[in-house]
Amino acid sequence: SPDMVHSSIADMKFEMALAELEAIVERMEGGKLELEASIATYQRGMALMKHCQQQLTDAEQQIRILENGELTDFNPADAR
Image 1 (tube, rainbow, N blue to C red):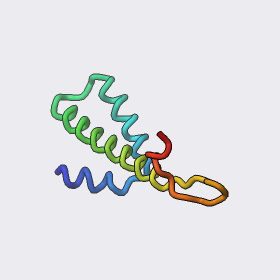
Image 2 (cartoon, rainbow, N blue to C red):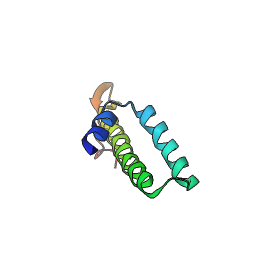
Image 3 (tube, rainbow, N blue to C red):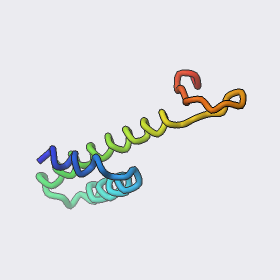
Image 4 (spheres, one colour):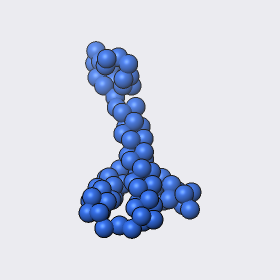
């Protein structure tokens, strides 16, 4: 079920999710998956991609920068 797919992905570390996503891309590029398997694999790949993007966003928000000798929270708006 889609809920099980997302719940198992939610606990994955970034590197593990990225490695699985790369494996999925390779399998799909091989063109040997049946239609039903291709759809399920695509859906899992999209969920993995969203998970990786969210982890990167979360990490970006946790970055701290040194400003005038003080650690401050990183603000993406200040970097623009």
